[in-house]
Length: 219
Image 1 (cartoon, rainbow, N blue to C red):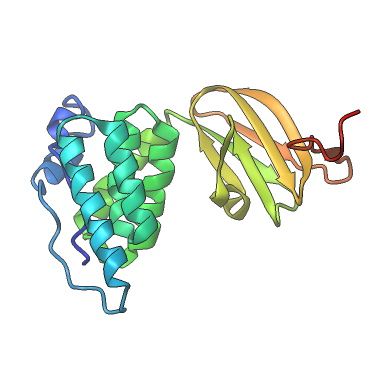
Image 2 (image 1 turned 135 degrees about the horizontal axis):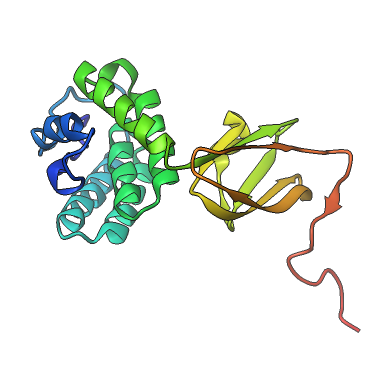
């Protein structure tokens, strides 16, 4: 179904600031959005399992168990990657203080939802996204990232190679880019709020990646 989206009471998430309009609009939607059923046929088992994980995530969110709620929403999305669920994933990241992940997820929510999102929601979420952008840094990649794996602080970011950029929380970050088993970039950077850092992938200077385990008998 297209109603897998949960809007909690935003007045409890933020003080009365420039986000007040956003909070008021979304707190009035403290329910699952009603919508048309998906036209495309989907696996019934996956849909039911996804809905169960989603419902569990909602209950955990209400109990302020945001990490557990995030796990449930992630499972729901992996079983049924519907754009509505991305909103809930982004919200959990926000409550956990993971602003960069929240921003990237909300941007994806807007991209995937497109014209299906109500105009008032689009307007307020876009305004909210601008606020988040001021709280994070951005890494822009230059060069050929085809077949590349981008890892920041040990966590892979599959969309970074496609988008050629990545939002990160301010502070010290360990960035590693590998292509076909070879490291093409590896460094520790420090990034501030609102700062943009460009990383040029020098494919001509390849650093062989360390093997995961022994490749032959140990003598």
